[in-house]
Length: 139
Image 1 (cartoon, one colour):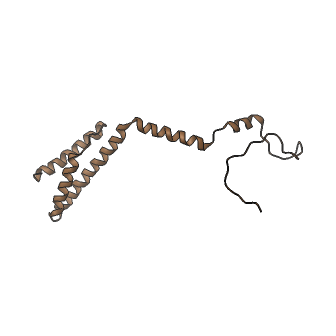
Image 2: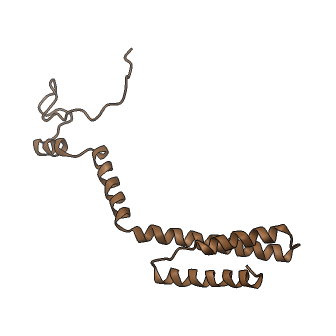
Image 3: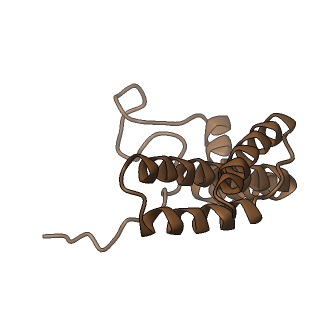
């Protein structure tokens, strides 16, 4: 019984008829032009690194997109801190409110500027709202 040791690449393409088949009998054959084209074809494994390199190159070409993603995430963190502050005010104002205010102050102090004008406008409004809440509590 034969064993399979591994998976290999494609084997060579043979042209013409198999030996032992009659001229008009059934069998598999590939025309000479098709065999040359198949032999010259690039395997998918060789193309994959090229595609990956191209995508990584595109990401490196636009650093503002990554900067805007970070700014957007930071703005969402500020909104989450404002929601936590609201929840603390509706509940019992204790140490949770002061910890939330401290966290909010830190987020506002480190808020990045966005390159996208629309995103920058939204983040500016979020920052202003957080600064109003901090000013109301004397921070």
